[in-house]
Length: 338
Picture 1: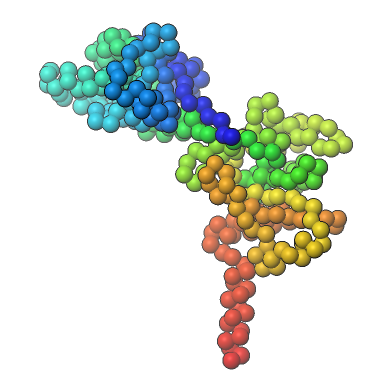
Picture 2: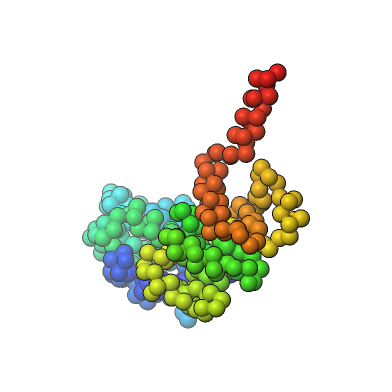
């Protein structure tokens, strides 16, 4: 079953990304325990507490009830992380006193997890005061609003995504993510080692982790404890980075193809479609990923076959199918003879 991280505190976000985003903690230090929830957890919590007034818990911090994760000032559909840039600050400055107070009330009413002022803009005094009053952490950053929003969306979507661990070796072959699967002892690690010597890169051995970070993207990574290592029968554990250099390792890759190694009998091999091969699909986190079964037998060069499978899959993704072209040629020749 997929695992998922469903929440993170504002302090955890600050500690892990303050240097990357140049964050300075300006006000609302007491709100460090405020929680940023995944969309699913937020929806579930909203349903469970519907019709009840939510109270602040001084131990765990208050929970953000806002709509989406990150975004610019939106008083109708607020965000858990509010980003205020030049446009938003000018909007506040241009409001009359009563309208300004109403806008500020609407900004803090949903209980945002935190507020970030981008572009190194001067932080207004009223914003500091209100953040201290409501316990909402206030940060400033030199990054642009667009870059902040995109980076935080990417980080949080990855953090909150379902994570599925599969058995196999995950590789980057010809710039696409390829998962090698098959029964234990079939030769997955040996094939991976040969591919590495041919210039391809290892992502993870034994237990690669996959998360769906977009409607059509499944991202594959390696657990921290297993990074750089590959188990090869007869050799034991080897460190691929130390043996072949940094270029032999890839931190992550989008999953595009699954190669299943199977020791098939001669009769089973004969039953494979001569034109289309053994193309099927496997459902990974509700996304259909193409899968090819490669028969394992003496004399078959699996590394060459896998490289060819990766190249051929790239052609298929671009809309080209060799078997369809062959059939079209045959049909055209038959018509010419008639």
